[in-house]
Length: 408
Image (cartoon, rainbow, N blue to C red; front, top):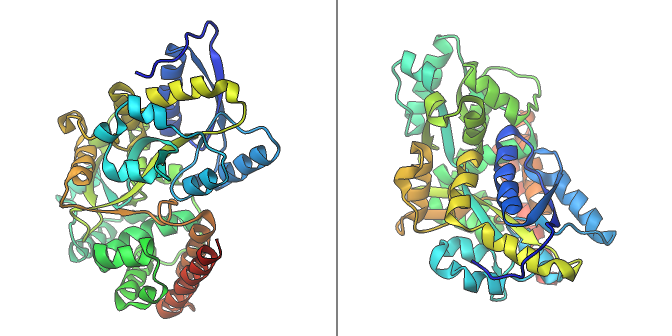
């Protein structure tokens, strides 16, 4: 472990994040308990709001007012923006002493490294292209989890015939974008997805495979029949899924953490499978915590906290309740439940395709993510908007992003 001066009295570290659901609170509590047992006092500064948009606004306000938290949940492309402004504490010493290069997946370490310096602590890996199927319902109807779209269409028909609403759906823009990018990966494949999302080629968004993905998104939205606009909270959808009101749940593997909080075992209430057409692919979002510059008198405690967060014990306890998987290369996957086992093994497989999430800031800025999510939300809510029009609008979003980057 990183050697730091002994602290007679617990040093308070103000930690800002958006982990506010039951499972997220349990995950944050696991981190807080580890802090407290090592002479650090976790002062919770949680901000509610699905997807973290509200927390980002509060964080910016605190930084501008000169009272930044000691640590904050800053993820994806936001990390480099904050590092360029000199707001985050480089963790080079921690990374060297904790052997991050040897312990952490290279793709994860690359994400948290800027100008050859680690700028955040990676906590866990979420799989976006993960779909849950209600175990009781599927067992009763003797249906296996579908692995392709034809099988899913058959499953949807059988669910409707049995009087069961096929899919738990919400028209919240971030939830629509989350489902879409997993569908997009299915239709585009990893090579085109990389051009669309990581390389951000505007013209690639006009590809016919993107049109097919958009049409499938609208098909999913229409599975439950004509609906008024509904922006249901993702946690409420998890509870309704667990109660048997829906057969299918698409919203990233963090929903497994919420099922665990409800039942004590996510495997007991659901089957887990990749989004149809994405087997062997991992569409990821990675939880990260940055140490912010403010009062430099807390630097030793911030480094001590950073060192704790990548320990094997804490990685296992945090990710189990969060629904994610550890960022460490050398863990025993047999200790993970079935869904986590598949997620970790896929990410660890050198032949697997690992691609970053657009909807969860891994591949684009907050503004770009919000713009794309807004376009997708309008598409599913307005039948007068065609898939081709939506492709043009998504291409325009990426074109704007390229212009912004060229001016930097």
